[in-house]
Image 1 (cartoon, rainbow, N blue to C red):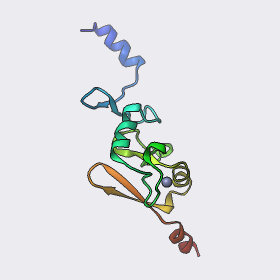
Image 2: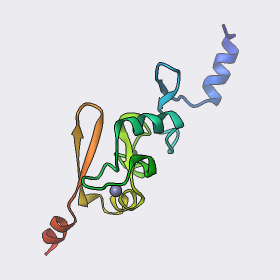
Image 3: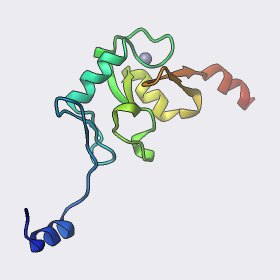
Image 4: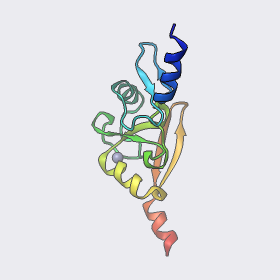
Length: 125
Ligand SMILES: [Zn+2]
């Protein structure tokens, strides 16, 4: 139990953070508070994905960067359900050219992206 004055002080001086943890108490959802995935999130992502989450890219997930399904710079969350592995090329290319990629759900807990560079080029002509 905390004294009311301490609760008021905490309310004034703190930020509220929503944390979702797994059964071992490891943090899985970080919302907007943190950009980089936690070690527990990385382990969970490597269990879900074998390779980069762009269709046809063979780079093993364990050699990938952790990517936000919704770009962090535009409000994406660092929550496990919105994170996945992307090789350095696809992570950067999807950030710079989001119109080249289409996202779809795979099962209940994964995403995949289809690369449409040629289709996007044809549309501009
Ligand atoms: Zn890739």
